[in-house]
Image (cartoon, helix red, strand yellow):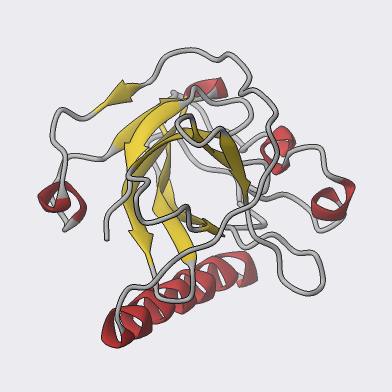
Length: 191
């Protein structure tokens, strides 16, 4: 029960942060990253719609990334906030016919993130035009600002997930989302 509470509490915190950011106004800017080239991965399906209407609660996801064991990451929202952050949120679905766990490899390979347990800390955003890669943010204790401690997902079930990144410059609207063990996908930034 505490695992689900933590995920819900973090998602609520993200929603509150976004709401506060919208009240103040959007002024996101941030960055950093290195110039490593993105790793090759399988193709992903992307919804044909784009723009704000897709991200304002329509049924079509922004992107669906297929992973191992029937898991699918559905990205429903990519939002900037006034604090210079970018929040990617959606659902981790199990389209398989038996229960599955999200691979520990999704946490990435950075020691500081791995020591805090399972997470989506290995996620990155790649801005091909600026040749920059953005990594998941961390708190002052080194914990990734993502969904953590994900439970086993029963067949046909899903859980809410989120990841926070430094926001690319406001001129950047298209990036490629990558998560270890999942296909990569182009996504569009809203706001």
